[in-house]
Length: 72
Image (cartoon, rainbow, N blue to C red; front, side):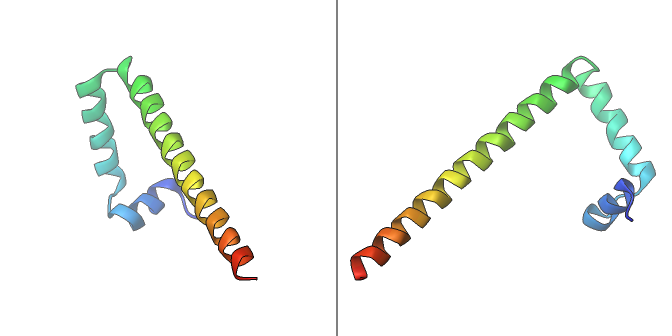
């Protein structure tokens, strides 16, 4: 099974030392108190994107079904 660092290496070409350096820089820039707030904001953004894309998908499927009904 892949470890998280090996998956990131495959996707981004990053190694463990580089990931640690990135996390340290993020910690220094934003501080320990602000990181959970940023993560929550990112999570909300991802959730809104998923909701919007699923809504668009439902709308397309509904239109496709109505076109099938009209053709029959």
